[in-house]
Length: 328
Ligand code: PBG
Image (tube, rainbow, N blue to C red; front, side):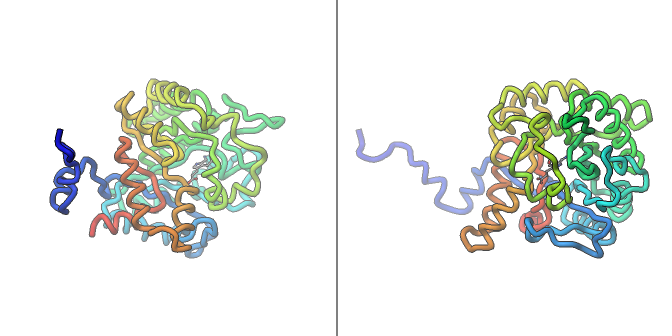
């Protein structure tokens, strides 16, 4: 036996060219979905304290952002609305206002950058006075009644030109119900991205500040979002949503749930997206601002980690910054 290793893994690592040659995964701008927060009071933008570098965009600024996405080769934008508190009610009625902020944002993006896909969240939390994703009665979130409202919200979005309906509410049966309604109204080409495995997570904290639902949220979302302890349940959720007509599925949060991304992408072979959520963004930015990590390096490393786990794409607030680096 030689005193030295028979296999020298370091040979391939010694030069830039050989590292590039044997690299197993690639990240490009094509893998990114830009998460944007829009607001009807932002003129032109409002800062989000818990997410340095992220701003709520007014519609004019959103148009410029859409052009920037197109130029950078970012395939799609995901819209999250900050609704004027005066427009919120118990039932989230503003969610299906045809002239509301989301339909306006959809039209704005489509006009400014027709080749950028538009993805819209379907859930009531930006629109309700109690901050929940569904209708609430005596402290409980009603399932079937909520689904009926989500159908109306999805149809308004499809009508405004949204390409991808993305229910993030976690009600049971909503994917099938929304798919049926889309078909019945002639929106046969409108896609559905289901937030199939969405966990009740503390990582959403900064988002709730960004859309203005955090301060009002009554209680927690554990009766509809998943327990962070569970994996098999995520597989059941995904199987149901595919069966009900989802074209793509999402895992959320992202980095702490890479095992779920991997299990789902391997098990189902369905396009699996991961959401690098607000708290993940905030952690990287906070550490970088303190000089404790190299922000850009950690951003790129975290995005590559999603690809390694099998994600088809990553929804991230970092999209334009990452795309700029990727495009050189
Ligand atoms: C709710 C929704 C949430 C996010 C997107 N849609 C948060 C929640 O469930 O409370 C979180 C996004 C993020 O944290 O970046 N429908």
